[in-house]
Amino acid sequence: MKVRDSGMPEESYWASFFDTNKAITRLLPESNLVGDWFEIGCGYGTFSLPAASRIQGHLHSFDIEPEMVKNLTHNIKQQGLTNVTAVSRDVISEGTGFAPSSKQGVMIYNLLHLEYPVALLKEAYRCLEDGGCLSVIHWRSDIPTPRGPSLDIRPTPKQSIEWMKQAGFSKIEPVSIEESCPYHYGILAWK
Image 1: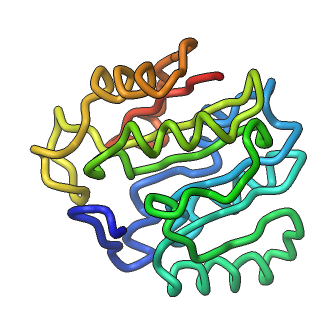
Image 2: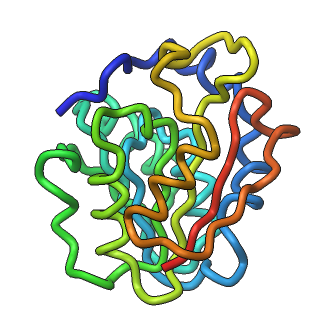
Image 3: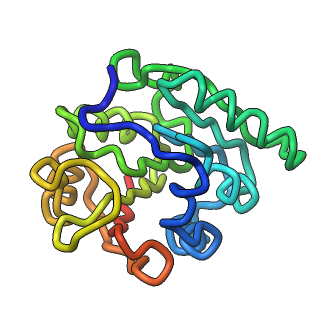
């Protein structure tokens, strides 16, 4: 199921919104770097590649768009990374296919404006090991941004935190990422 009000701009324009290497050090906590992670909605792989370089495990990157997966697979090969796999899958409709409590972390970036965010967060929670980490970023709704979904469907940090609680997460912390992602906010949560 395609997320409402989605779509990707040209890749270099998209990449201009983020200092991904700086952001990923804030968004992937040291305590959760050993083990397998997954990413829902990898897009161009803007965060996938730096995340794969940081974690000590395998990163499974999903996207509903085959072209995004093809692009990321090409970039994985170009960079010689062996610990990341890109797969075309509708995670919203089909789930991840992972066993319960089998992953150390999950990245959900720029997707919580979908129609049923709690269902997606519950799938993330189901897949995480005890102590596993959920890493979220989303477009801010309190400032003008050059891109992103309609302001009326962008969740605030408070709303995202409430959805995380509904999905089962209890330890939840906002993350300061403004210097690397000025149009976004970040949140970490643990199972």
